[in-house]
Amino acid sequence: MLNLDSETTPSKGWLYCGNQPSQIWVIAYCGYCRTLQVQEESVNLLQSQLEDQKSRFEAGTVPQFNVLQAEGQLQNQIPSK
Image 1 (cartoon, helix red, strand yellow):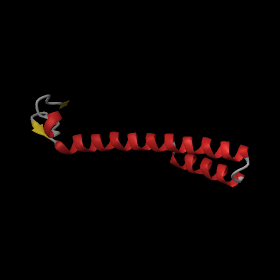
Image 2 (cartoon, one colour; image 1 turned 90 degrees about the vertical axis):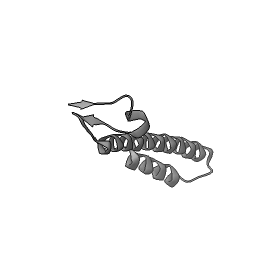
Image 3 (tube, helix red, strand yellow; image 1 turned 180 degrees about the horizontal axis):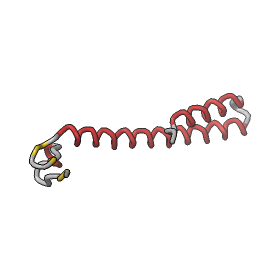
Image 4 (cartoon, one colour; image 1 turned 90 degrees about the horizontal axis):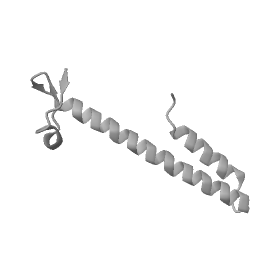
């Protein structure tokens, strides 16, 4: 059974499994959350860039290749299920 110790978890990053502290699990979980946040920010940025390329293509200032490239980059960043 995993229990978070409210006194030590926020400041020292310890997770208690029974009576034994395990800092590795907290670090791994925090790293996973940060990875998800970075992926989400990256997808948002790529969506914005795709919309920008579409607008530029419609205005005639960039070739369709730029739109296709932006679409591919966005699809490559979205995690597969």
